[in-house]
Amino acid sequence: MNEIEEAKKEAIRRNQLVLEEGMRSKQLYDNPVVVEAFAEIRQTIYDNIESSSWSSQEEREELYRMLKTLAAFKAQFERRISEGEKAESTLRRLINKVRQLA
Image 1 (cartoon, rainbow, N blue to C red):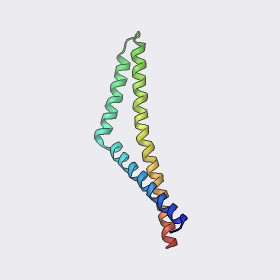
Image 2: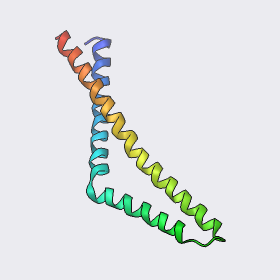
Image 3: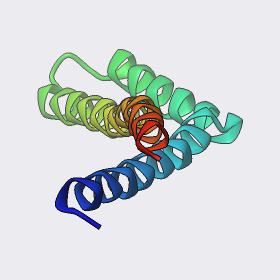
Image 4: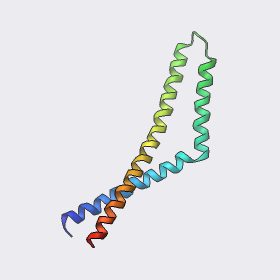
């Protein structure tokens, strides 16, 4: 097996791993229990901001950081899902090239 074929096989393997991670991330992200939990957490934070007193600046800042953390957590899922979709496309192209060489 030559270096080009080895590189293609390694690229296929890496893309398969990224695709699998993306699929697992999508399953979790789309799970109704997870969707509901995210929505409830977000709403609770907003409710706490709304009910905070004018003098509770530190509390509101902490709640704001919580919102940002929740958004960052969701963004990690979205990034992995996007990477998985790109890997799937790349994987299809690589497999087609390998089939053409066979």
